[in-house]
Figure 1 (cartoon, one colour):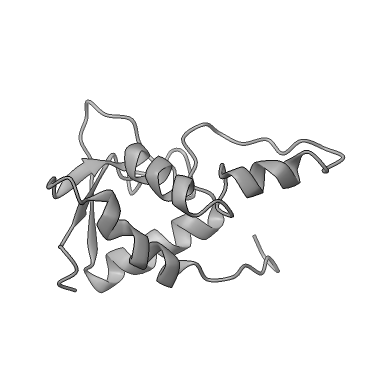
Figure 2 (tube, one colour; figure 1 turned 30 degrees about the vertical axis):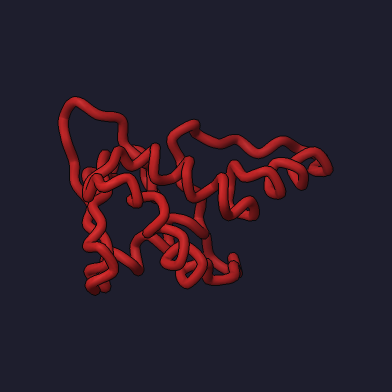
Length: 117
């Protein structure tokens, strides 16, 4: 979206993502990663704070259930570019929509390097 200005949540996501993978798995479903991050970072789309703001909008936003939201998509893309996480696509899994629902770049799974990036 041209002209859209957002805070950069990359540092906050980077600080929390290790806890998401703390169970020992190095690869998790992308939607599970999103849901875990939204639970600890409530300002992200779908989080408690963000949902509270939606109540005050005169027109309800139209969103797809599997969307990451602009801010989280930006942060995950930056972490992927740095090598801190990897995106995988598996044919039998639901995708996390980063931008375009038809894109073949939307991950179904996210891998974590263990903070080695």
